[in-house]
Image (cartoon, rainbow over all chains, first blue to last red; front, side, top):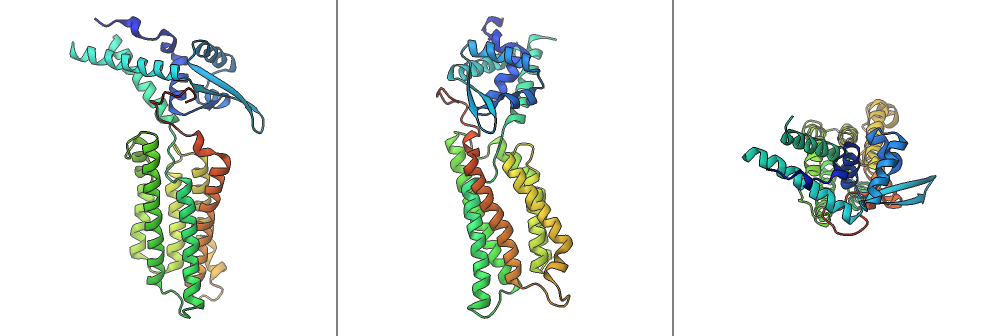
Length: 99
Length: 221
């Protein structure tokens, strides 16, 4: 029997999983880039990013290039949590195939 | 839907998102610098042949000079791509590399076939420029913006020259543009455009914002 408690519930939510995935694929993303890629509203994206930041999974920095922007990146803790989440999902699939 | 189905679906979503977000640079900035300088060297060779040797490059010599430049640039690119892959702790034939090869192959293969069929340097040069642009544009779904702009520049320049070359370089229809003129076009495009690309990538720090190994334990990845 598979222990579902091993799945990180914070990451398991659809929107946050998409954010974590994009952040794992590149070193960092500007807020507008994440918004365009995920087609989320500002409020929705901010809420998810705040939850991930509070968990210590995501870090951000503000910078001014042509105009001010905020860039988001995975922290080491966030990357580890994401990798662990993937491992658990893969294990779920493997367990189902062998049973 | 079973939990296993749900897990499989999640994994597929993750994979598709990661593939969409992954950037692969098929031409590194150092390669562009080397290729650009070698192209200028190609023009210098044609200039030397005409003015010092007093015997302009023949069609065959033109072909050899530019194939050597292509080979040297290709080897340089392999070196820098393999070094980049090692730094990112990725296999050399990563999924990005495979996508790049598949995307570039049709245009590059066409260019190779045409090289055997066409013997007029001016036509060859313009087809190389256009097909190179098409090849780079083929990678646009995972290439950084600078590569797309480079591809578009080659493509538009090639198309523009294919339409206008007779008026620009053959005022007398009986006289073919010399190897020096054609080498000048090659140097301006493969030389100039690549040098501009390398400068832009370094100036904008584009390579520094591209993927880093997924297993690094540093805080700011």
